[in-house]
Amino acid sequence: MILVAGSANLDFVVRASHIPGPGETVLGQAFHTFPGGKGANQAVAAARAGGASTRMLLALGDDAYARPLEDSLTGAGVQLHIVRSPDQATGTAFICVSDDAENAITVAPGANNTLAPQHLPALDGVSHLLMQLETPLASVAAYARAARAAGVKVVLNAAPAQSLDADLLGLIDILVVNEGELASITGRQVGVAENLQQLPVPVVVVTLGARGCCARVGEHYLVQPAFAVAPVDTTGAGDTFCGVLVAALDQGAVLQDAMRQACAASALACTVAGAQSSVPTPDAVAALLQQQPTDAAAAQALREFCGLAI
Ligand code: RIB
Image (cartoon, rainbow, N blue to C red):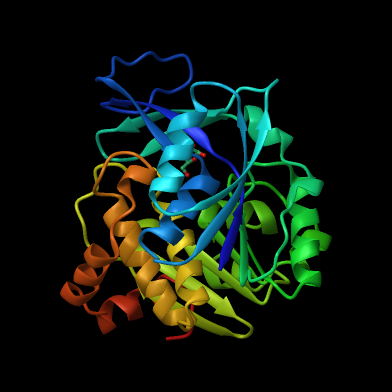
């Protein structure tokens, strides 16, 4: 069983030709709300696309924004441990999605900031604890410490980017980052493989957008090229990757296979608008895996991009 401890936000989304720069106003299209938040998105991905038994610890306000978040999580089969914060608004995120499917996100954490060390539920039966960085860092560290003591694998998606101290890194079994987050943690702008070597974490997975992903396991490296899709909205694709990766590991997959499933699910998540609304079904993931077998030339090109020996 997977326990996700993290954020839930209601996403307020506007599509526009491009993401506005500083001081710029753009006229967008219709406005929509979607259930989001990195934690909740990852829980939905683990439960729906990954098919894993999933629980989530989250904090919500006592307001109208909370209900669609609860409904989306329970609809995906996630069991909830809700900390209700009557004095705080439910978390919200303000997202502009451009015509080329990229996004810019500003989060107002609200109730997410009330998730405290004492809120961690019992870890009986939990194989993996999956966390992100949209909730207080002190709580993330406390939960990681408790999970390590209980023999539960600690998986951290270090998003949004911030630097992490050595104490916290020492509690993590699997770190999942994108290239920017990796550079924020190491403080170095070097090649992917060289940057992965800097981190004192047994397994580090870096997602590389339309290229795929790369992992360092001890001294060894794995790559998984991306799946080809026509992207509409990349919001939540990284979260789908994390949820499906951990779900596959929870169900006994080896890391290479888990990366392949996670890449396929996150590619499909880019083809539908919204975050949790875009998490694919297991059948859709299986169909894409069958349609696009791993291509040796693409894997070699990715190894070269990452700076791995040819
Ligand atoms: O990773 C995408 C998510 O980031 C959005 O759903 C938004 O809520 C922010 O947490």
